[in-house]
Figure 1 (cartoon, helix red, strand yellow):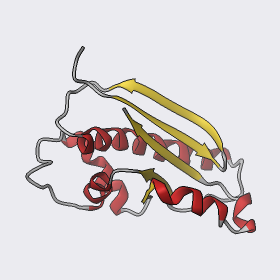
Figure 2 (cartoon, helix red, strand yellow):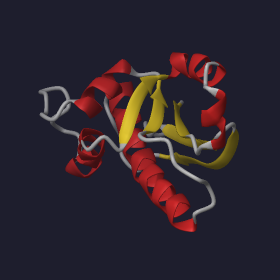
Figure 3 (tube, one colour):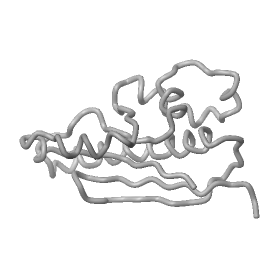
Length: 140
């Protein structure tokens, strides 16, 4: 048995799952925050691609901005919003820090996963016709 984590993310369009990915991570990491940060980075790239693809198809009247990512790790959320490195995260490979740039542009918004049910219930009726792309990040 190796120390590599199994990680997954799920894309939902309105209330239906449209894509998902589950795989063993290529690198061994020291903490759950680092595991989820790597998954979040991969999910972020997929989310940006999917949003652009759906816009190009023109199958929905408009897309809600920003795309929302739900994550249950506050360390990941803080790290994604922070534009500088810290001593605990300085060893994370640079390629995963694309996540920070995308978040700083306002393309994505990070939210704790506990808030997701509330947001879906209180969604105004006029917004139900719009594209809502959300991502769940799951790590085992």
